[in-house]
Image (cartoon, rainbow, N blue to C red; front, side, top):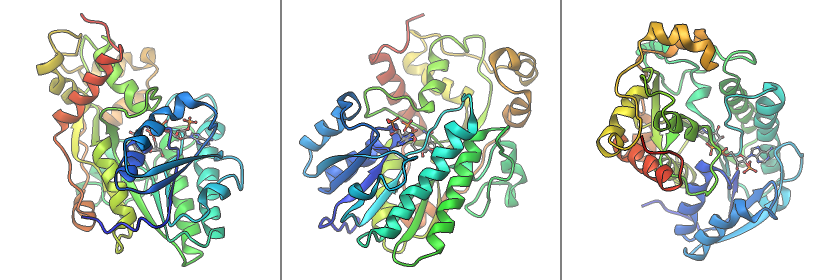
Length: 352
Ligand code: NAP
Protein backbone atom coordinates (compact mmCIF):
# COMPACT_ATOMS: atom_id res chain seq x y z
CA UNK A 1 0.00 0.00 0.00
CA UNK A 2 1.26 3.46 -0.87
CA UNK A 3 1.56 5.98 1.94
CA UNK A 4 -0.61 8.77 0.53
CA UNK A 5 -0.83 12.22 2.13
CA UNK A 6 -4.47 13.20 1.62
CA UNK A 7 -4.25 16.56 3.37
CA UNK A 8 -3.21 18.53 0.25
CA UNK A 9 -4.86 18.56 -3.17
CA UNK A 10 -3.04 17.30 -6.25
CA UNK A 11 -3.20 18.72 -9.78
CA UNK A 12 -3.64 16.75 -13.00
CA UNK A 13 -3.12 18.46 -16.38
CA UNK A 14 -4.98 16.99 -19.37
CA UNK A 15 -7.63 15.43 -17.11
CA UNK A 16 -10.06 15.19 -20.04
CA UNK A 17 -7.68 12.78 -21.81
CA UNK A 18 -7.52 8.99 -22.10
CA UNK A 19 -4.50 8.36 -19.85
CA UNK A 20 -5.31 11.06 -17.29
CA UNK A 21 -8.92 9.88 -16.87
CA UNK A 22 -7.76 6.68 -15.16
CA UNK A 23 -5.21 8.61 -13.08
CA UNK A 24 -7.95 10.95 -11.86
CA UNK A 25 -10.15 7.94 -11.02
CA UNK A 26 -7.36 6.30 -9.00
CA UNK A 27 -6.71 9.56 -7.11
CA UNK A 28 -10.41 10.07 -6.36
CA UNK A 29 -10.73 6.45 -5.23
CA UNK A 30 -7.78 7.06 -2.88
CA UNK A 31 -9.74 9.96 -1.32
CA UNK A 32 -7.70 12.83 -2.74
CA UNK A 33 -8.88 16.24 -3.89
CA UNK A 34 -8.00 16.62 -7.56
CA UNK A 35 -7.51 20.01 -9.21
CA UNK A 36 -8.20 19.59 -12.91
CA UNK A 37 -7.19 22.49 -15.16
CA UNK A 38 -8.85 21.94 -18.54
CA UNK A 39 -9.01 24.03 -21.71
CA UNK A 40 -12.70 24.79 -21.35
CA UNK A 41 -14.47 23.86 -18.10
CA UNK A 42 -17.78 24.94 -19.67
CA UNK A 43 -17.56 22.03 -22.16
CA UNK A 44 -19.27 19.58 -19.83
CA UNK A 45 -19.29 16.82 -22.47
CA UNK A 46 -15.51 16.60 -21.83
CA UNK A 47 -15.71 16.61 -18.04
CA UNK A 48 -19.03 14.91 -17.15
CA UNK A 49 -17.39 11.48 -16.72
CA UNK A 50 -14.91 12.98 -14.23
CA UNK A 51 -17.69 14.64 -12.23
CA UNK A 52 -19.54 11.29 -12.15
CA UNK A 53 -16.38 9.49 -10.98
CA UNK A 54 -15.95 12.00 -8.15
CA UNK A 55 -19.56 11.61 -7.07
CA UNK A 56 -19.02 7.86 -6.68
CA UNK A 57 -15.64 8.15 -4.89
CA UNK A 58 -14.39 9.47 -1.54
CA UNK A 59 -12.29 12.17 -3.26
CA UNK A 60 -13.32 15.48 -4.81
CA UNK A 61 -12.66 17.20 -8.13
CA UNK A 62 -12.42 20.91 -8.94
CA UNK A 63 -12.12 22.25 -12.48
CA UNK A 64 -10.06 25.26 -13.56
CA UNK A 65 -9.37 26.91 -16.91
CA UNK A 66 -5.85 26.63 -18.37
CA UNK A 67 -4.01 26.11 -21.64
CA UNK A 68 -0.52 24.72 -22.21
CA UNK A 69 0.27 27.67 -24.47
CA UNK A 70 -0.88 30.36 -22.03
CA UNK A 71 1.89 31.21 -19.56
CA UNK A 72 0.66 31.51 -15.99
CA UNK A 73 -2.67 29.85 -16.67
CA UNK A 74 -2.01 26.90 -14.30
CA UNK A 75 -1.35 29.16 -11.27
CA UNK A 76 -4.81 29.09 -9.74
CA UNK A 77 -5.23 25.32 -10.16
CA UNK A 78 -1.81 24.59 -8.64
CA UNK A 79 -2.38 26.66 -5.47
CA UNK A 80 -1.90 24.44 -2.38
CA UNK A 81 -1.10 21.28 -4.40
CA UNK A 82 1.61 18.92 -3.17
CA UNK A 83 1.90 16.86 -6.35
CA UNK A 84 1.51 17.89 -9.99
CA UNK A 85 0.79 15.22 -12.61
CA UNK A 86 1.63 16.70 -16.01
CA UNK A 87 0.02 14.49 -18.63
CA UNK A 88 -1.33 17.07 -21.12
CA UNK A 89 0.36 16.90 -24.51
CA UNK A 90 -1.10 16.19 -27.93
CA UNK A 91 -0.84 12.54 -29.03
CA UNK A 92 -1.58 12.82 -32.75
CA UNK A 93 0.43 11.24 -35.53
CA UNK A 94 -0.94 12.98 -38.63
CA UNK A 95 -0.50 16.72 -38.15
CA UNK A 96 -0.30 19.60 -40.64
CA UNK A 97 2.30 21.66 -38.82
CA UNK A 98 4.43 19.58 -36.40
CA UNK A 99 6.04 22.62 -34.77
CA UNK A 100 2.70 24.29 -34.02
CA UNK A 101 0.61 21.17 -33.37
CA UNK A 102 3.09 18.97 -31.45
CA UNK A 103 6.37 20.57 -30.42
CA UNK A 104 5.00 23.88 -29.10
CA UNK A 105 2.28 22.45 -26.84
CA UNK A 106 4.63 19.68 -25.61
CA UNK A 107 7.68 21.83 -24.89
CA UNK A 108 6.15 25.22 -24.05
CA UNK A 109 3.46 23.39 -22.07
CA UNK A 110 6.03 21.52 -19.97
CA UNK A 111 7.90 24.79 -19.36
CA UNK A 112 4.67 26.57 -18.45
CA UNK A 113 3.57 23.90 -15.94
CA UNK A 114 7.00 23.35 -14.37
CA UNK A 115 7.73 27.08 -14.05
CA UNK A 116 4.41 27.35 -12.24
CA UNK A 117 5.63 24.62 -9.88
CA UNK A 118 8.66 26.84 -9.21
CA UNK A 119 6.31 29.66 -8.14
CA UNK A 120 4.04 27.41 -6.03
CA UNK A 121 5.52 26.83 -2.57
CA UNK A 122 3.34 23.79 -1.77
CA UNK A 123 4.61 21.61 -4.67
CA UNK A 124 7.00 18.82 -3.64
CA UNK A 125 6.85 16.47 -6.61
CA UNK A 126 6.06 16.63 -10.31
CA UNK A 127 5.19 13.42 -12.14
CA UNK A 128 5.71 13.92 -15.87
CA UNK A 129 4.01 11.63 -18.38
CA UNK A 130 6.72 11.30 -20.96
CA UNK A 131 6.82 8.29 -23.29
CA UNK A 132 8.99 5.49 -24.56
CA UNK A 133 8.95 7.78 -27.62
CA UNK A 134 11.48 9.91 -25.73
CA UNK A 135 13.71 6.80 -25.67
CA UNK A 136 13.34 5.46 -29.21
CA UNK A 137 11.68 6.20 -32.55
CA UNK A 138 11.60 2.87 -34.40
CA UNK A 139 11.67 -0.76 -33.25
CA UNK A 140 15.07 -1.08 -34.92
CA UNK A 141 16.47 1.35 -32.29
CA UNK A 142 16.01 -1.46 -29.69
CA UNK A 143 18.69 -3.57 -31.35
CA UNK A 144 21.15 -0.68 -31.46
CA UNK A 145 20.62 0.14 -27.76
CA UNK A 146 23.30 -1.18 -25.36
CA UNK A 147 22.46 -4.84 -24.55
CA UNK A 148 19.95 -4.96 -27.43
CA UNK A 149 17.09 -3.41 -25.47
CA UNK A 150 15.77 -0.02 -24.41
CA UNK A 151 16.60 1.16 -20.90
CA UNK A 152 16.09 4.40 -18.99
CA UNK A 153 19.65 5.41 -19.96
CA UNK A 154 18.75 5.64 -23.64
CA UNK A 155 17.52 8.86 -25.28
CA UNK A 156 15.81 9.20 -28.62
CA UNK A 157 18.34 10.56 -31.13
CA UNK A 158 16.56 9.59 -34.36
CA UNK A 159 13.25 11.53 -34.35
CA UNK A 160 13.09 15.02 -35.88
CA UNK A 161 10.64 17.66 -37.02
CA UNK A 162 10.47 15.78 -40.35
CA UNK A 163 10.50 12.17 -39.16
CA UNK A 164 8.16 11.00 -36.35
CA UNK A 165 7.62 14.52 -34.91
CA UNK A 166 5.43 13.18 -32.07
CA UNK A 167 8.43 11.24 -30.74
CA UNK A 168 10.53 14.36 -31.21
CA UNK A 169 8.01 16.42 -29.22
CA UNK A 170 8.12 13.95 -26.31
CA UNK A 171 11.93 13.88 -26.35
CA UNK A 172 12.25 17.68 -26.29
CA UNK A 173 9.52 18.03 -23.64
CA UNK A 174 11.10 15.52 -21.27
CA UNK A 175 14.53 17.15 -21.70
CA UNK A 176 12.95 20.52 -20.92
CA UNK A 177 11.44 18.95 -17.79
CA UNK A 178 14.83 17.69 -16.56
CA UNK A 179 16.48 21.06 -17.25
CA UNK A 180 13.90 23.00 -15.20
CA UNK A 181 13.93 20.42 -12.39
CA UNK A 182 17.73 20.66 -12.09
CA UNK A 183 17.58 24.43 -11.52
CA UNK A 184 15.86 24.14 -8.12
CA UNK A 185 15.60 21.73 -5.19
CA UNK A 186 12.16 22.21 -3.60
CA UNK A 187 10.35 19.69 -5.80
CA UNK A 188 11.62 16.58 -7.51
CA UNK A 189 10.76 15.24 -10.92
CA UNK A 190 9.72 11.63 -11.48
CA UNK A 191 9.12 10.57 -15.07
CA UNK A 192 6.89 7.81 -16.40
CA UNK A 193 7.76 6.55 -19.90
CA UNK A 194 4.83 4.48 -21.18
CA UNK A 195 4.93 2.44 -24.37
CA UNK A 196 1.74 2.35 -26.48
CA UNK A 197 -1.20 2.64 -24.09
CA UNK A 198 -4.18 0.35 -24.73
CA UNK A 199 -7.25 -0.68 -22.73
CA UNK A 200 -10.74 0.76 -22.24
CA UNK A 201 -11.38 4.50 -22.09
CA UNK A 202 -12.90 6.18 -19.10
CA UNK A 203 -13.71 9.28 -21.19
CA UNK A 204 -16.71 9.13 -23.51
CA UNK A 205 -15.09 10.67 -26.57
CA UNK A 206 -11.49 9.45 -26.69
CA UNK A 207 -9.38 11.09 -29.39
CA UNK A 208 -6.05 9.54 -28.38
CA UNK A 209 -4.08 7.92 -31.20
CA UNK A 210 -4.31 4.61 -29.25
CA UNK A 211 -7.86 4.12 -30.56
CA UNK A 212 -7.00 4.63 -34.24
CA UNK A 213 -4.70 1.62 -34.19
CA UNK A 214 -7.28 -0.78 -32.72
CA UNK A 215 -9.96 0.71 -34.99
CA UNK A 216 -7.89 -0.20 -38.07
CA UNK A 217 -7.56 -3.79 -36.85
CA UNK A 218 -11.32 -4.20 -36.35
CA UNK A 219 -12.88 -2.16 -39.15
CA UNK A 220 -11.57 -4.23 -42.07
CA UNK A 221 -8.75 -1.82 -43.07
CA UNK A 222 -6.25 -4.64 -42.47
CA UNK A 223 -8.48 -7.55 -43.51
CA UNK A 224 -5.93 -8.79 -46.06
CA UNK A 225 -3.19 -8.89 -43.44
CA UNK A 226 -1.68 -6.86 -40.61
CA UNK A 227 1.95 -5.81 -40.63
CA UNK A 228 4.10 -7.06 -37.78
CA UNK A 229 5.13 -3.65 -36.42
CA UNK A 230 7.20 -4.18 -33.29
CA UNK A 231 5.97 -2.17 -30.29
CA UNK A 232 5.46 -2.22 -26.54
CA UNK A 233 2.08 -2.05 -24.81
CA UNK A 234 0.91 -1.01 -21.36
CA UNK A 235 -2.65 -1.17 -20.03
CA UNK A 236 -4.10 2.26 -19.28
CA UNK A 237 -5.28 1.05 -15.84
CA UNK A 238 -1.82 -0.27 -14.93
CA UNK A 239 -0.37 3.03 -16.17
CA UNK A 240 -2.60 4.97 -13.76
CA UNK A 241 -1.24 2.91 -10.86
CA UNK A 242 2.27 3.66 -12.09
CA UNK A 243 1.56 7.40 -11.86
CA UNK A 244 0.32 7.06 -8.29
CA UNK A 245 3.36 4.99 -7.34
CA UNK A 246 5.61 7.67 -8.91
CA UNK A 247 3.85 10.35 -6.87
CA UNK A 248 3.69 8.62 -3.51
CA UNK A 249 6.85 6.51 -3.34
CA UNK A 250 9.17 8.86 -1.44
CA UNK A 251 12.38 7.45 -2.92
CA UNK A 252 11.15 7.45 -6.52
CA UNK A 253 13.58 9.14 -8.91
CA UNK A 254 14.43 9.40 -12.57
CA UNK A 255 12.72 7.80 -15.57
CA UNK A 256 10.65 4.61 -15.61
CA UNK A 257 9.97 2.51 -18.68
CA UNK A 258 6.32 1.56 -18.11
CA UNK A 259 5.53 -1.24 -20.52
CA UNK A 260 4.03 -4.64 -19.81
CA UNK A 261 4.65 -6.43 -23.09
CA UNK A 262 6.78 -6.40 -26.20
CA UNK A 263 4.51 -7.35 -29.09
CA UNK A 264 3.54 -6.40 -32.66
CA UNK A 265 0.41 -5.27 -34.47
CA UNK A 266 -0.35 -8.70 -35.96
CA UNK A 267 -0.04 -10.40 -32.56
CA UNK A 268 -2.57 -7.93 -31.13
CA UNK A 269 -5.02 -8.93 -33.90
CA UNK A 270 -4.36 -12.61 -33.13
CA UNK A 271 -5.15 -12.07 -29.45
CA UNK A 272 -8.54 -10.65 -30.46
CA UNK A 273 -9.47 -13.63 -32.68
CA UNK A 274 -10.89 -15.90 -29.91
CA UNK A 275 -13.55 -13.47 -28.77
CA UNK A 276 -14.18 -11.32 -31.84
CA UNK A 277 -12.82 -13.18 -34.90
CA UNK A 278 -16.16 -14.68 -35.87
CA UNK A 279 -17.97 -11.33 -35.97
CA UNK A 280 -15.41 -8.74 -37.08
CA UNK A 281 -13.01 -8.61 -40.06
CA UNK A 282 -9.82 -8.94 -38.01
CA UNK A 283 -6.65 -9.74 -39.97
CA UNK A 284 -5.91 -13.48 -39.95
CA UNK A 285 -2.45 -13.39 -41.53
CA UNK A 286 0.61 -11.17 -41.32
CA UNK A 287 1.23 -8.74 -44.16
CA UNK A 288 4.65 -9.55 -45.68
CA UNK A 289 7.16 -6.78 -45.11
CA UNK A 290 7.96 -6.41 -48.83
CA UNK A 291 4.28 -5.96 -49.66
CA UNK A 292 3.75 -3.44 -46.88
CA UNK A 293 6.84 -1.56 -48.11
CA UNK A 294 5.42 -1.52 -51.64
CA UNK A 295 1.95 -0.37 -50.55
CA UNK A 296 3.09 2.02 -47.80
CA UNK A 297 2.82 5.34 -49.74
CA UNK A 298 -0.77 4.59 -50.77
CA UNK A 299 -1.60 4.06 -47.07
CA UNK A 300 0.15 7.33 -46.13
CA UNK A 301 3.01 5.48 -44.41
CA UNK A 302 6.67 6.35 -45.02
CA UNK A 303 8.76 3.50 -46.46
CA UNK A 304 11.51 4.41 -43.99
CA UNK A 305 9.04 3.63 -41.18
CA UNK A 306 8.22 0.23 -42.71
CA UNK A 307 11.90 -0.67 -43.09
CA UNK A 308 12.65 0.28 -39.50
CA UNK A 309 9.60 -1.26 -37.77
CA UNK A 310 8.03 -4.15 -39.71
CA UNK A 311 9.11 -7.65 -38.59
CA UNK A 312 11.42 -6.10 -35.98
CA UNK A 313 11.26 -7.22 -32.36
CA UNK A 314 10.60 -4.49 -29.77
CA UNK A 315 12.49 -5.00 -26.53
CA UNK A 316 12.67 -2.87 -23.40
CA UNK A 317 13.82 -3.49 -19.84
CA UNK A 318 10.94 -2.69 -17.45
CA UNK A 319 12.73 -3.94 -14.32
CA UNK A 320 13.35 -0.52 -12.75
CA UNK A 321 9.62 0.23 -12.54
CA UNK A 322 8.84 -3.22 -11.16
CA UNK A 323 11.51 -2.94 -8.46
CA UNK A 324 11.49 0.75 -7.52
CA UNK A 325 7.76 1.42 -7.89
CA UNK A 326 6.30 -2.09 -7.48
CA UNK A 327 4.63 -1.94 -10.91
CA UNK A 328 2.69 -4.94 -12.19
CA UNK A 329 1.14 -5.60 -15.58
CA UNK A 330 -2.02 -7.48 -16.52
CA UNK A 331 -2.01 -9.92 -19.47
CA UNK A 332 -2.02 -8.28 -22.91
CA UNK A 333 -5.02 -10.38 -24.00
CA UNK A 334 -7.13 -8.88 -21.20
CA UNK A 335 -6.09 -5.34 -22.20
CA UNK A 336 -6.93 -5.67 -25.88
CA UNK A 337 -10.13 -7.68 -25.32
CA UNK A 338 -11.45 -5.09 -22.83
CA UNK A 339 -10.62 -2.27 -25.23
CA UNK A 340 -12.13 -3.95 -28.28
CA UNK A 341 -15.29 -4.94 -26.34
CA UNK A 342 -15.81 -1.31 -25.31
CA UNK A 343 -15.30 -0.10 -28.88
CA UNK A 344 -17.85 -2.68 -30.10
CA UNK A 345 -20.29 -1.45 -27.46
CA UNK A 346 -19.72 2.13 -28.59
CA UNK A 347 -20.41 1.24 -32.23
CA UNK A 348 -16.87 1.57 -33.62
CA UNK A 349 -17.19 -1.50 -35.89
CA UNK A 350 -19.70 -3.18 -38.15
CA UNK A 351 -19.97 -6.97 -38.14
CA UNK A 352 -18.42 -8.86 -41.08
P1 NAP B 1 -5.35 12.37 -25.17
O1 NAP B 1 -6.49 11.53 -24.76
O2 NAP B 1 -5.41 13.04 -26.51
O3 NAP B 1 -5.09 13.46 -24.04
C1 NAP B 1 -4.33 14.62 -24.28
C2 NAP B 1 -4.71 15.66 -23.24
O4 NAP B 1 -3.90 16.82 -23.44
C3 NAP B 1 -6.17 16.11 -23.35
O5 NAP B 1 -6.69 16.26 -22.05
C4 NAP B 1 -6.05 17.45 -24.05
O6 NAP B 1 -7.10 18.34 -23.72
C5 NAP B 1 -4.76 17.95 -23.45
N1 NAP B 1 -4.21 19.03 -24.28
C6 NAP B 1 -3.78 18.97 -25.56
N2 NAP B 1 -3.40 20.18 -25.95
C7 NAP B 1 -3.60 21.04 -24.91
C8 NAP B 1 -3.42 22.43 -24.71
N3 NAP B 1 -2.94 23.22 -25.66
N4 NAP B 1 -3.73 22.94 -23.49
C9 NAP B 1 -4.24 22.17 -22.50
N5 NAP B 1 -4.45 20.84 -22.64
C10 NAP B 1 -4.13 20.29 -23.83
O7 NAP B 1 -3.99 11.54 -25.20
P2 NAP B 1 -3.44 10.43 -24.19
O8 NAP B 1 -3.19 9.23 -25.00
O9 NAP B 1 -4.28 10.35 -22.99
O10 NAP B 1 -2.03 11.07 -23.83
C11 NAP B 1 -1.78 11.65 -22.55
C12 NAP B 1 -0.30 11.70 -22.30
O11 NAP B 1 0.25 10.39 -22.34
C13 NAP B 1 0.48 12.52 -23.34
O12 NAP B 1 1.52 13.21 -22.68
C14 NAP B 1 1.06 11.44 -24.25
O13 NAP B 1 2.22 11.88 -24.92
C15 NAP B 1 1.36 10.36 -23.21
N6 NAP B 1 1.50 9.02 -23.79
C16 NAP B 1 0.44 8.43 -24.40
C17 NAP B 1 0.60 7.17 -24.95
C18 NAP B 1 -0.54 6.44 -25.64
O14 NAP B 1 -0.30 5.39 -26.25
N7 NAP B 1 -1.78 6.93 -25.54
C19 NAP B 1 1.83 6.52 -24.86
C20 NAP B 1 2.89 7.15 -24.22
C21 NAP B 1 2.72 8.41 -23.67
P3 NAP B 1 -8.47 18.43 -24.58
O15 NAP B 1 -9.37 17.35 -24.03
O16 NAP B 1 -8.96 19.80 -24.32
O17 NAP B 1 -8.10 18.19 -26.01
